[in-house]
Image (cartoon, rainbow, N blue to C red; front, side, top):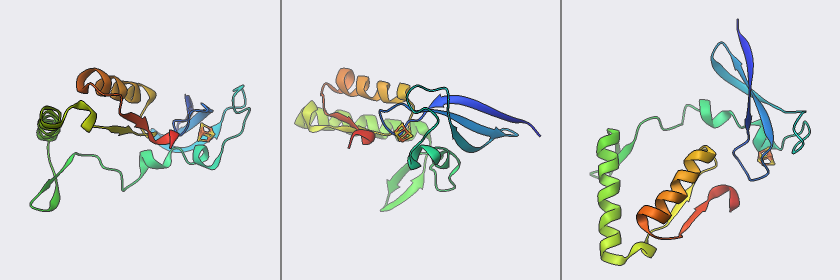
Length: 135
Ligand code: SF4
């Protein structure tokens, strides 16, 4: 049996509480607060204590889905990305960049959220971007 803790930052809001992910035999099993953190000093709110749950959830989407004939069906990343790129390009050319907005997720990493806002600003050409932890 191998138990380890991995330090990281809670992704649910901008407070930036430090957490220790509990990993048992390679499986994420829980979260502990970091006592050494000057931000949270060994405390977490209820969201932080349950930070690991979305990672291991059975309901988590693991493959892209595309609506075909009124139903969502599993598809490849290539087809999904081509579909999204085609639709965004069409909307932008027909209605302008400010007709597009993006909402990113606290369940993504900070790096992924940074890339989302860069994509929206630099590739789409709008400042219509927000993050669910700020709502
Ligand atoms: S533990 Fe709670 S307060 Fe701390 S960063 Fe996460 S959501 Fe925010």
